[in-house]
Amino acid sequence: MRVSVFLSIFLSIYGLLHAYTFFKVKNAFRLSRRSGVGLFVFLAFMVLCPMLTRLSERVSSELLSVSLAYVGYTWMGVLFLFICLHLCLDIAGFLWRLFNRGKPVWNRMLSRRVAFWFCAAASVVLASFGYFEALRIRTDHVVIRSQKMPAAISKIRIVQISDVHLGLMVRESLLRSILRKAAAEKPDILVSTGDLVDGQIDDISGMAGLFRSIDAPYGKFAVTGNHEYYAGIERAMAFTEQAGFTLLRGDERDVLGIMRVVGVEDPTADRFPGIPTRSEDQVLSSEADSRFVLLLKHRPVLNPKSIGRFDLQLSGHAHKGQIFPFSLIIRALYPIDAGLLSLPRDGFLYVSRGSGTWGPPMRILSPPEVTVIDLIPK
Image (cartoon, rainbow, N blue to C red):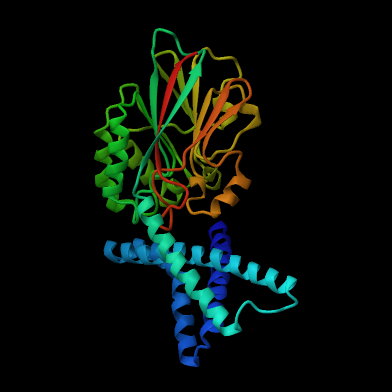
């Protein structure tokens, strides 16, 4: 039922975006009836392309699925940029006419064609930049001082990857780049804060061995994200554990007697009855803990009851919007879209921009990252 509702909402919104594009093209070029029908068929196919990709993933060859994914999701990114740019011109044109007594900027037809070609060219240029930007993995360094870290230990280094989205779009070459960055930092602890996989995972099982090449003497820990459930939670769990991670699902592990690593399940689990897991409130101790408490949680949402019960929460999910200006919406949804946030009672929240991409294989003003967190005595 919920899947049907989601698909209905998605198709409605995505269809409206394509309808907007259809009328922009039609008005700019005065299309013939045949050309208009051809454009309509093309745009209708692109509306359905994401669903066709998932369907082919289940019943057809990998080559067809990957081809549909690249065509459909690249188009999605270009279309999003085109519409954002054209809406800005529409608003500017409206304001011009409002304050100039309806006088058009140029000849009406010339104005529409110039606007279309400008937005089309600019969106392709921006999408091309975003494609290469998504391949340039950054290493972001964070230092956190804590009184709970004993002076005898100079530091504990945590390396965080998040939102890799291994699947049709994120393949072995990008994964190798991500893990090369992670391994170079010589982590004591490696964590994955959800969405390690995306979609069907039958064809990526061979990549699990790449994670095992990273040495993390104090452990590798992971939590689920929403996409683990979309991929199939049982297979996603098997892949994560095959990659060498200890999957924390409302569970915890002790590290050297000085750190407590706690992981909670993504809220998507609530849609799947029968999944045994403890809530964040249950797994976090209500008593003061002399150990440093590291909370792994996919979504960058703060539970007011948890403040003071953990020292550092590591999250992902938001991608910092992935493509500007979508990041403006993300900022309205979460307390912080990316980076470090200081909390009351000496706590911190760090939100990763993510290491891979979801949907459009591009990033604009939201570069991918591998995060290095050094915990040192205060």
